[in-house]
Image (tube, rainbow, N blue to C red; front, side, top):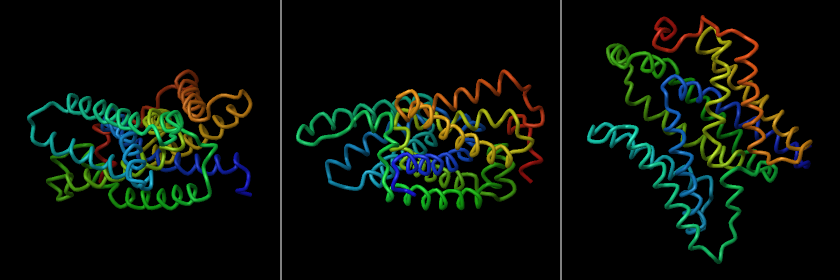
Length: 276
């Protein structure tokens, strides 16, 4: 069954979507869209280092994304530079350093467009195994930290008062985000990873009566976007990664036009009861 390249692409894309959806809910709730961009841009630096040291690309991307995220966390807690300034600095610096490093590797053939915009049709069985095993691990850890991290999303003061260690759960979340960026790199590319995190979650928010259901719907909407995007790419001969994002965007627009906002799913600041 997995001998067909299109089937492998579907299985891999759905695997990434099922993980990105629930994480994307926290990205939406905590307004971390630019943080996701920073990690995805840092992924290109990870690609450059992987080729430079002949290392595994996924591991290198994870390591660099995690290093950038931890640097951001440390600098933000120092309070010397505003968060949005830090995000812009790290995001564009990592992307620029990665591109400059790649330009020096004239002897190495690198599909830069594939890493920027994804090459889901080229995924292998090993890639699928990494995505599904890694995704299962990410979702298991997210389930463990769901309550304390959601409480911290509502109010860090309340979470601290209840002894839920918001800083520790934030650190765990950063590790999970780095893992998802590393997994999604080959699917939609460094420049489109954030879209896979944001758009399904933003779409699901219109329908979800509670945070847990929003996470489930975000995963399902992401999977549907992958299916529609890949079939659209096959039918219209368009790039697969961008096609998936366009499909997700169409689903989002459709949700805005056809359905009223779900008033039972307000921002996390108004969902204090759900964190208990």
